[in-house]
Length: 598
Ligand code: ARG
Image (cartoon, rainbow, N blue to C red):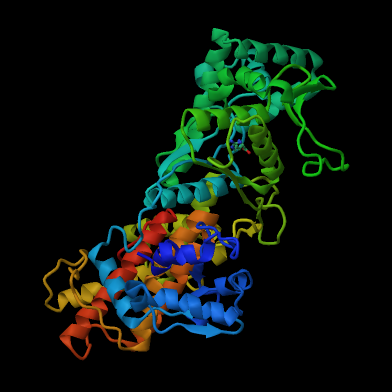
C-alpha cells in the first residue's frame, strides 16, 4: 500500500504536527494529509509542505522545522527505506522520491495480488448511496442522463472496489403533477392500456402537454386525476403503472447497451408515503408564505435572479408536494433506514442550487447530521455539439441516445474496415470489436474530461487512435497482451490468453524507463484514493493515459523477449503484466471492457 498514507497515519508524524500544547497550537488535525503526491514530478514523488505552516507556532525557522520533520521520518525505518534521502527545497518544502528498492518491492507486491494491485481497502468502509441516471417517465432520456449514468456507474464501481458498501439508486421522475395530464390524456384518447406500452412516449408527452396548455377543461380534469392517483385510486394507479413500465423498457435498452448493472430503481413515487412526515418533521421551520409552505434559509447564500432571498418551497399553493419535498424525504430515508454515511447526487450543474438548498434545509431540520453523513452534489456540465452549440441532429431535433450509441459503433466499424486495407471486407470480428470500442469511446470521452466543464461531443475525437481516447487505451492494452502471447509462444508454460505466472519473480529496475514505469504503476492506489475523495474521474483517465505512455517508452527501450538475461526477461514480463492489469482494472472501473486483440 501507499507509503504516503502510512506516513500520514503514522502516530509520531501526526502527533508532531498536531500536539496541542499551549506553546504549540495545532495547525494540523489528524485528518489533514501531510504528505501529498508531488505537484511537479521533477521534485519527486511526494511532497510535504507542513514545515511552512508549523514553523511559526513551533518557534522555528521553516527550514529548521523541515529538518525536524526529516528526523521524524528517519526514526521510522520502514518509511525511511521507502525513499531516497529526502531533500529540503526553497523555504522548507520537503521532496520525497521513492527508492528503487521500494519501487521494485511495490511492483512485486502488485504482481502477487492482481485482485487489488496495491490498492488497500478503505480503512473505514462507509455506507454510500450513489443517486444517478434518474431519467423521467414518459420524457426523453437525454444526453444529460447519459452523462449521469456513465459518471455515477463509474463512481459507484470505484467506491465499491475500495470496499465501501454501495447502494446504486435510480431516482426516476415517476411522480408529480405531470402525471395528471399524462393519465388523463391516456384515458381520454381511449388508448388501450396495454397498447400504450408500445406508443411513442415522447410524442405522447408532447400531445398531453399541448392539451394541458390549451384546454382549460382538460387542465381541471388533469388536476383531479392527480388527486385520484395520489389517493391510490385503482384505475389511476393501473394506468400509471403501465406508463412507468413502458418507460422502463426504454431505459433498460440503454442500460443494457452500456452494461449498467446493479442500479436499483427507486423513483420519486417510493417517497410519496413519507412526504407528510417531512412537513411534520420540519416543525416550525415550515412557514406559510403567499399560500405556499416554505423553509427560509440563509438569505445571503440563496437568492433568486432578482437578488431577493429565496426560500425552499416544500408545499405548493395548490397543496401539492414538489421535487424538493421528495428530496428531503429521500435524505431522511437514506439516513434513517439506509444508514448512509455519504450520499452522492450525480446531476447536471443546473441543479446545484436545488441541492444546496435541500441539503441546507435537511441539516436545519436535523434530518441529517452533516458531521456524520456527507451529502454531496456531483455536478457536471452540458453536452454540446462540436460547434459549442446545443447538441442536436442536423435537423435540430434532440439526439436519441440509441442513435448516438449506434452511430459511435457504426463509425468505429468503418474505421476498422478502413484500417484493414483496400479491398478488405467487414468481418464478424470487426463488428464485435466495434461494438465494444464504440461504446467505450462514448464513455471514455465523457469520463476523461473534467466533469464540471461543458463537453463538446465529437465522434471523430472520441474514436481517434491517438491521444487520450478509448481506442488508444484499448490498443495499448491489446499490445501488451500480444507481447505476453509472444513470450508464451517462445516456450513458456502458460496458455496464451492466460496471464503468465509471474508471482514471486524478482523485479529489476536498472534502466531509467523501467524505473519510470514502476513509478507510474505504484501510483495506482494514490490515484484511486484521490478520486474517491474529490470524485473527478478524469484523474483516473489521466493516470491510465500516463501509464500507457510510460509503458510505450519502456517497450521502445527495453526488449522483453530478447532481454540480455533470463532474469531480466522475467522481470520485464512482470512490468508488462502489471501494466496490463492496472489498465484492465482502471478501465473496468470506468465501465470499459478491454479486448485481448484489436
Ligand atoms: N429526474 C431528475 C432529472 O431528470 C434527476 C434526479 C436526481 N436525483 C435526485 N435525488 N433529485 O433531472
